[in-house]
Amino acid sequence: MTRIIITGACGKMGKVIASVVAARDDCEVVAGVDKYNDNTCAFPVYATLNEVNEKADVVIDFSNPSLLDDLLSYCKANSTAVVIATTGYDECEKKKIADASNDIPVFFTYNMSIGINLLASLAKKAVNVLGNDFDIEIVEQHHNQKIDAPSGTALMLADAISEEFDKPMKYEYDRHSKREKRTKDEIGIHSIRGGTIVGEHEIIFAGRDENITLSHSARSKEVFAVGAVNAAVFMSDKTAGMYDMGELVK
Image 1: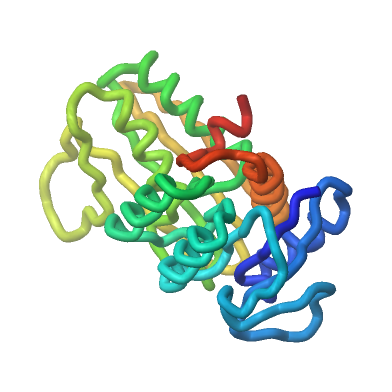
Image 2 (image 1 turned 90 degrees about the horizontal axis):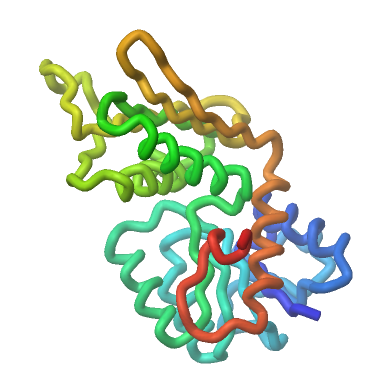
């Protein structure tokens, strides 16, 4: 039985994760962490990780990048694996996550959906087939409450695509500020925020007289919660190191 702590337990994703865990018999939520406890959870909820009394195998983090230091400190002090599903980290914070993996098992991905990770694989394949003859644009859509833009998933897709080129690619976020032709070493990334859109990602390969589009549509937050719980169970017996969806879906 995998024992789980959820950070951000009273948020929308935290509650979906708790409901997914409740429907399984191979894991359980032993505690939650949330500054704003609404007293609706079926497990104890603490304001900070340091207040947690229960022993856990894994922490699932769906909170905020500002809490990263406390998260990593707790996990290292308690030799606890962590599944990091929060987005919006800068390069310095990503380095902290990578450094922590020297001491504890860390599962880090920009998107917990298996479908999105398949999309990244298909995009890499497309680059190898299409070569440099197609311009690449990424369009991502999310709800109007999402703070970071572009989404971490859009950046993950762009990074996956860039790995397939033998030259550096540059990400273009804002075309209105310059008047010049598009260059071949660009990947355009565009963000849309509105309504209650859960998550839409589209990769456009635009060539001469033909376009190829790869897309993924998330219809509910449950797809991310299922992935996060699967990752937590997967991580419960792992040694220190960095893990991602690639290991989970092998």
